[in-house]
Image (cartoon, rainbow, N blue to C red; front, side, top):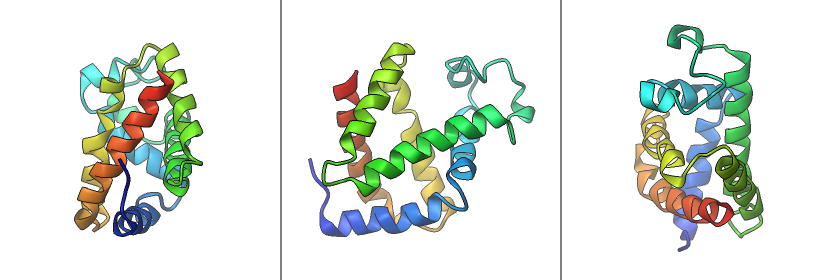
Amino acid sequence: MSLSAADKKAVSDSWAKMSKPSFQDAGERVFLKLLKKDSTKAMFKKFKDIPRERLAGNAALREHGGKVVQALDDFIKGLDGSGHETVRNVGRIHKAAGMTNDNINLMKPILLELLDEVGCGDAKAAWDKLWNLFMTVHGDGC
């Protein structure tokens, strides 16, 4: 499962927009959307007891979101395989925390939604391929 040169360019160009202005800001956007559902919010020990209206600007949420975006950045910049070990390590961390690949896959629709928000909806097919590869590599760590 590989991405074509055109897919890689679409991912790279859209990622440049999605990950701005900082990894913490981008991660916060992802997690505010992800934690809208009570069932998903309950999976996160750090955040489950924080009222939803107090999550924006929360230091722990921004830190965790920043780490997630950093891992995605490592993966995207290392599509030659050099970014895979980062994702395998994340898979091991998630497994130790009791998270499954199905839990992690909840991020996919959030990322696709964010593509639309930054005007890069035309990159969804490339991101679908990217995410499938990400989940395969993540599963290798579980």
